[in-house]
Image (tube, helix red, strand yellow):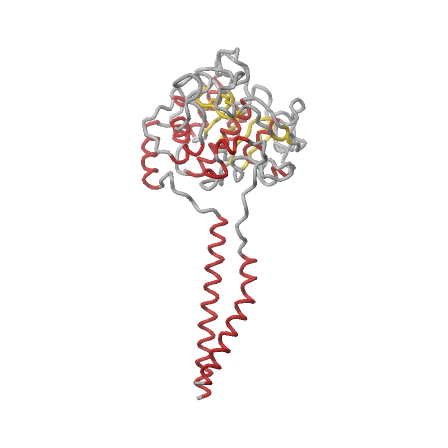
Length: 395
């Protein structure tokens, strides 16, 4: 009896020692969950959209590339380090691959839009609403949209952001052909309505069929007075006092314009495309329109479209397959709206919109626990076997 007690004590001593030695190495091999970046206090749209509380637990834009057709992006900045892919310069001969912001008038327009979408919270502290998405930067010559759109489509973009426009009477046929090409490849194009309320039509490319044209609202859900109205405007997003960084990496508060509204809307498209990977671009846009909050004049209007974009509702609400989606009604794309509706119904059966996916950090922590438990079990079995063997020899 005394011998058995002595064996048990020796065994548990060995197990405790082995566990104490192995545990730190297991924890080092399995990184603990990291806290999500906290947005700056000036980024009021985070609270208004409940991004950190409700949206990020569902998705942060993982796996989605946004083609940013603008002035290039200053990829060296800490706010954007690691999220800017090699892109293309159409503005002239350059080996910068779009990763240098060439804007000499606004201090870095493309960089500011990229930070609104994918900012990492370093440097100035600027955080984007889809921080795990990636930016494909494409600088362009003014008015030239055809080649940049096709380049973005051919290089993996699932969303194309154009926070700019050129006043025209109608969409040029060459640009419309490029938009149709993007739709055929299931790419969502988002463009700014414009910043001149005296115009009676949105800018190109916002006036092209198949483009999600974005108007502006303020923090009180009131239409922004300078947002350009037009029959192509389909939705509205924050455009008043929306600050961001420029190519110098300095945060500037208080910017107004549908450029910012467009970038934020593209970020929401990235969140949705990440959360619903099998859902078509048409269905993504349909969800956004169906769940928008009516603002301004009752019903759809030419300044805010179907209303204010509400990301969490777009991620979780049930949307009827037959809800209107006029963004694509006149597009020459061969993609069928009817087939898109069938895909939506099938997807809802296979992957409920309210399902919350675990993050990679959660999975890492779970595996750490599993490995620790497995190690303890193996050590226990080995120790008991050895103790039984010693006990038989001693008797």
